[in-house]
Amino acid sequence: MTECGPLIGYCPWDKQRPASCGLLAPRMEGRVDTDDPEKTPGVLWVRGANVMLGYYKNPEATEAVMGADGWMNTGDICNIDADGYLYIRGRDKNMILGPSGQNIYPEEIEQKLNNMPYVAESIIIGNDGRLTALIYPDIENAGKQGIAEGELQKIMQENISALNKELPSYSQISGLKIFHEEFEKTPKRSIKRYLYQ
Image (tube, rainbow, N blue to C red; front, side, top):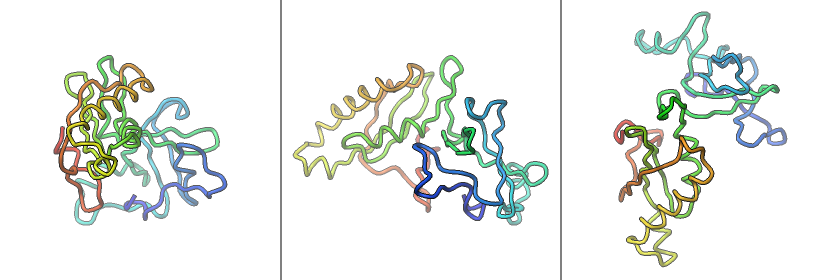
């Protein structure tokens, strides 16, 4: 994260834990704004010598993320286990509220979907209490395997059916839209989600 010069957490290769982004960096403090950060995800706040003081000539943006005593809201939703390992669930601004009030983190679903056959990239969006997968298929790789572009809709639907078996009922995907061009990206290669909501 650029605002943290740029490191919040890391882990030596021999101490990694599955799905964790590591421990807080040296001289960095962190807290999750829930009563039980091991079980209940919340927003990660950090403080340390490498955390910015504010955005240059932008007091409104600074005020939006900086709290008292130098604590900065990262916008990341995470858990911290008893040993201090961080587990990022998603971004606060991307969280989707499920039909019964459950928090759905689209990045978790997208990560799984992006690892399925012939999926180049995806976005999960919420529409009227339903989740829809927007998928840009790996058309080039499919073509090399002898799969026609017209067959990709069926393959993507099969991917979603397989993924839904792994997901809780409130975060299952019910809609699908295929995109024939890559999703528009920021200069740092993040998908511009707001264009697809």
